[in-house]
Length: 464
Image (cartoon, rainbow, N blue to C red; front, side, top):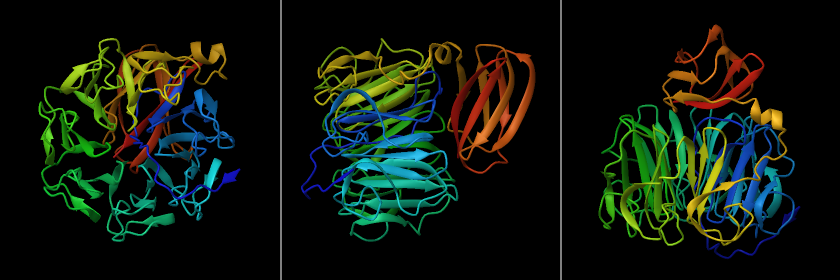
């Protein structure tokens, strides 16, 4: 069902960070917006919860929901991205679907009519990654090109214009792209040489190029190299280096840059004290990092408990959330809430909850992580108990990585996003770690299926 929405400014923001981790029992991939959250289950069906004023939950109706609800129609989902008032879904057939607010064409279906059920984004095929900003979207194709659509008032589409687009457009100046991310009105990508390009709104230096001038074409962040992940916050940006250190730049009113100050910066500066980082996420005024020991570290604004440390005090340096261990995936939204997934599939949520975006059945904020218990409840008990833990490191990877299991495994099967088998490794019963080489494969998303007799666990890996 579609609904025409007045063209007035939407007052909330979201950010998607494409993350990878152990894809086990319950939620597989998580994404936050300003006021809603997304996930999908091992059967490829979507879940959404929180604000639904524009149909962003995609379940065919308009009321908000403070518990996860099923996304209509779309199945085979392998990635999700939450925008300001819209959501996008990547399917296993490499097509993209979207629901929610569409005043600027952010659903990409050629219209400005909002929809409370997913509609297909025009033209796009062969997509391997997606990202959503406040009112614009990005998609990365298997040929390493970037496609954009939606609002473009600050040049956030990066195509040299400032006009909106209701259908995807290719950024002709970009090739060899391996990762994408979106802030409120700015965008970031990583190229195959591990350098960053940014474009869009730059009023607080969030483009990292030493200026506060908006740009409608991609600009090199010349001071950074060896980058393996990027994350766009509301008006700040984060980058993760191959040595597992983090850099941040842009707006710093709440200490969200994590460098011990509250001063904005137009150039990347190292985040204090944190090392061994494997994933990053940027919110409205706070940031998250996941360490290789499975702990989560947060910094920045904490009015609604978005730092998850049991207080409501801001912090301009990273602090650990002591109650979380064994975490494999993190996500945060511009609306001051965050999500983390444990290696056994358990999902934890904290921060602002005014629209039910924590999904715990209440509308109460929480400054400590609370368990989300109603996710993917369509799974049987056997489906859950037969899963086992596997880890992949590093992830993202250049093609060489290690797979480790806590049970004896008998085979490893690797498929691409189209479900095509690219490698099969039979094993004598083996418990521990094994090194895998996929450097002869194209860059993109792959699924690692680890087999242990009658049990199977699957994890997603990004090759860049």
